[in-house]
Amino acid sequence: MNELLDLLWQRSVLLLDFDGSVCSVFSGLSGREAADTLVKEINLPVPEGIARTRDPFDVLHYAASLGRATGERIERRFAEIEVEAVRSAQATPYFGNFMRLVDQTHYETCVVTNNSSEAVSVYIAAHDELPDYLRHSIFGRTMINVPLLKPNPYLLTRAIEFTQETPDQCVFIGDSVSDIQAARAASVAVIALANCPEKLQLFAEYAPDAVVTTMHTLSEAVSYML
Image 1 (cartoon, one colour):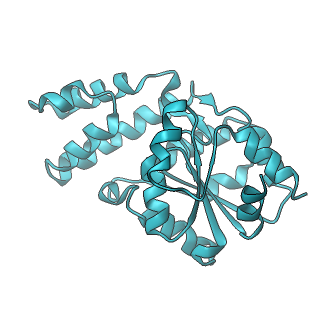
Image 2 (tube, one colour):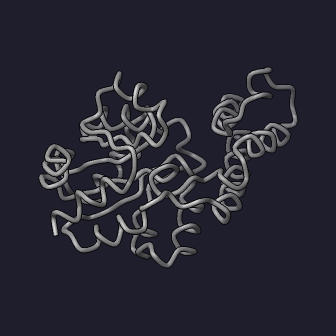
Image 3 (tube, helix red, strand yellow):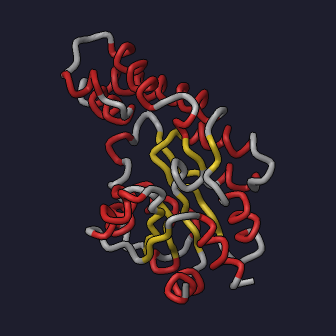
């Protein structure tokens, strides 16, 4: 806990991943359903790996390789699917309490995500326990930045520029290897959320600054700062 407290106390900007840290986007509408829909939208023969994937981001990146028009069309369709998905998305346990505590601290908070900004905004607006100001500090996917999604540090760098702080004043919370890689590339401290047992071993190879298994641990750490 002391290591986590030191990590949080020394920084003024909190950067949050969305899918995982805030909610589980495809917990209602499944990722496989989203991927299948996008494959059909491409309306061309696709490699077997793309046809069978459970990850809609695989289809998105493949579509982008087919040219700008196809890539942008599939990205817009994916954004529509994400907006539908977040309406039934399960909130990450303890995240609401975590944000209530964060609101009592000195932190400036941004959401940095590979999901569409529109979907994040819709989710926040539908949940009264989340502060509305988050809707104005979302750094997410658009039609034109698909090649720059995490693990590329582009979105994190944009968020840091928005806050007018330096990377050493920021800490990023994410639940994927690409989150850790993006944070490292942006010279930002990273707390990895290992929300399933398999991730504990997976994340160890990438040496995040801290690992937690639940947002409750982060809530406790922030509560000590009040």
